[in-house]
Image (cartoon, helix red, strand yellow):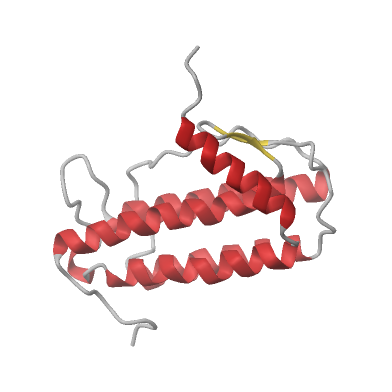
Length: 183
C-alpha cells in the first residue's frame, strides 16, 4: 500500500474544513461566483480550435467541458440522491472520457447545459438544512470519501482545476476567444 499523496491530503483537508464551516448559501455563492472563471476560460478558447487538441496526449476544450459537465451531472445526482432518499451513490470516476457532448458545439452551449444542471442542484441544496445524511459518502478515487456538503465544495475545486486547463489550451492556440456573453 502506498502513502497518500500529500497534495491530495492538503486539498482534502481544505475541502472538509471549509465545507463544514460555511453555510449552504455560502457554499452555493462561492460555487456560483467561481464558476464564472470557468465560463470565461471556456469562452476565451478560439472557436476555430474548440475541438482541437493542443497535443497528442492532451484534451480539447470540448473534451474538457464534456468532462466538467459529466462530473457536474454525477455529483448533482449523487447529492440529490443522498438528500432525497439517503441513497448511497456509486464510486466516482474522475476521468476524461475523450468524448464530446452531442448537440453542444460551443463554449456557450456547454455553459448553458452546465448552468442549467447546477441551478437545479443549487435549488435542491438550498432547501436542505445541511446536516442530512452526512454519513453517506461520495467517494473520489484520489481524495477519498466526502459528505455531500464536502463534495459540493469539491465540485468548485474541480471546476477551477479544469479552468486552468482551458487557460492553457487558450494560450497554446494563442487566442482570446469570444467575449462573454456571446453575441
